Image 1: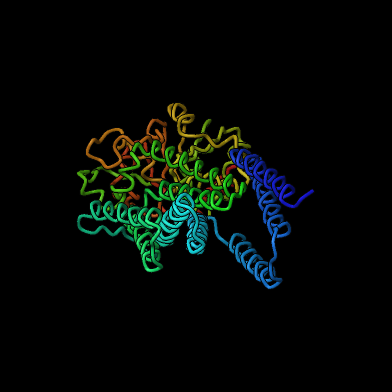
Image 2 (image 1 turned 45 degrees about the vertical axis):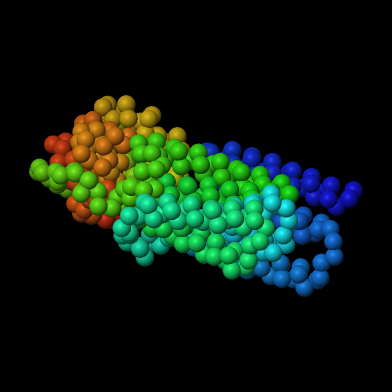
Length: 461
């Protein structure tokens, strides 16, 4: 069998593993296996491409490729193994940015090889989209790890950014269709695309990061698909299309979960200066609860729903909360977890966090499924969540989160909220739930407070 036929078969099998792996990623019980299947397909495609390449290649090229793969494998493996769960969103942004950078560099190199107009158009699309994804992902990484703590909004930002976007694509179009582009103009488009990527993400507030990560992920997939078109490589094309379409779909889901059009996410900077949008401070009485009282209340409940938020991830308290769940269940308490689509710093953050502590996936209930159950719930324990449980989304038309679907925890009989302080969430507004007569505040670090709660429950056996 000729090499190119064998390589086509390998690419077909690899593409199938991507589809199967993506399907299996939809459920935590099969996600790990699906990830390994897709990774195996990618490994087969890489080895096949190198081993079955037709044409004369100098041995030094194979040596350089092998060294690059080994370096990348070691760095990626060590980084993924050592990263804390709270840093997972930053890692996703960083890895996503590397994909965009690869697509951009491929385009820079291939531009000099020339070709027909269609080929140059594909090269320019890969260059521009990959550069935007890379620069935007790095800014998202810096925002998530705290290097950039505040959004930066320039005067007339929307107009400037829109003009810059048109300039970037117009310059790329000129290079593609004129056939007379210089190296200086090529690198000028590259620099402008990088700058636009920075400008695209830098004003966006922290609450919108899950949406931004999904959107940038779709950009990287699209840029990779351009590489697939460029080389006639089915694996790059299939993988890019899958990543791009999945990222786009997830972006739409995130926007619906926040009841915000994508346009407002990009240009609205939700989470920065939100109080100026018109929402006034909430006034009322805060009621504290002690560890012992919280333990008694939960111990004698029939149904408890736990609402995890980013504070749970920051405190690395996922294992303790799983222990709390197990203790309550042994005493006949029905325990579930209510998951809001945008809780945390990336899509599915809470699902991944709880899966790490081996929480049964059947206990994780999505917002639409769990909301009707709050009215029949004895105790809701909110750990580190804020805006996703704020009744202002229903009650205050002047609030920046008005209309956003939330978890209806206010309908429960008793509400316990664990927070470090009374600081506002990403939206920058007070939470009406804190002042609800049914709410009791359990202040302190989530891991410390939950550990004491577990200890207290054990003494009640």
